[in-house]
Image (cartoon, rainbow, N blue to C red; front, side, top):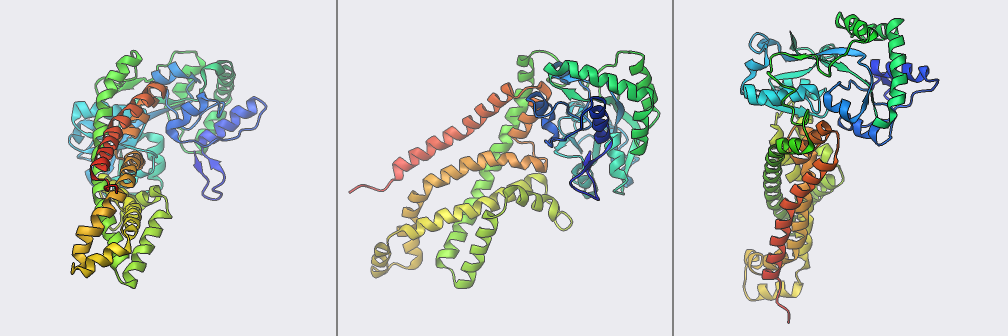
Length: 465
């Protein structure tokens, strides 16, 4: 489902019409609650909505944690590549050493995780199904693995890529309800079966140009009461679903499987935060110095920069750096994340340093100049050291804040700690254990930094009279 081009306030799509169909069957009117794709299950489980519909895939994990309707659509995972490389990349095995994009928390992502080990490719997870294809055309990824419905929809709006005919996997769309809502799920199943019998579902799918030869076979199996597995088959990746860390076994087994991924994501978080903070400090010092010592024009320009950065969301700045200027400058995801966080925090750091510099008493500065010290000497020997002691505590606070704000860069496909935790929680069907592990790792990263800052404050604090 998506917003209508004619009326952005209205949702359209075959899932919207199926929701309306189910509501009418219950004598109700549908009302949509908008949440992120990865949070639909959790939102339904906590009671924000009675049913979740948005191309949700049937899976063993979802069946264990939710009440799942009968499958109403059969899809195929397909590989999309640039036109000029259609003959080169026909299967996942051909993409060794290459980057392959997909929507996170999906069957396709699980397949790519398995392919990382089997074929040595790199899985790139996105928050939506639009940017994988735009990045494919920009050369940021070499292929996209998504279901045929999304691939065909994108091909109707974009040119330059080919959908390979061979299916990587087969799956089904279902509706999800909370475990306690199993009786309502049974009612909805009856409505769906009736829509299959009288051709209503077929008319909906034909309207949205997604009806194909797979659907009559699925409807026949559903109406005949045949058991349908969560995933009918996987080709091209050996045991992909069996290797999903949360697909089977206990929470402990899933934790042991995901812990290396969480630790690797923590390293990305630490590296990104340290590099961004280092550049933010350098830029902050330069900006603060320019505002204190520069001429009127320079001060005005630097003040405008600080106010612009502080007055706009960091998420918007990240989108502009990665997607907005991509036609002119194609920054890698990590570089865009690094620059975005650094440029944002430089504005805040500069205010800390400026106020610290201006907080040094005028008497001390005049005395130093009277003794014949040059302005650089006054800054390095008198003003700078005192300002640094004042700025140390807020600098530390900003570093801890930057460590947490690094979670925003997941929108740029950077697999940092929070993004990896979200995938873990979705596959496990619960946020309790993944949330605790994520919090513990963030504390393990931030507490030593706070302890170091306190130690430096004690060592460098100004002497008392």
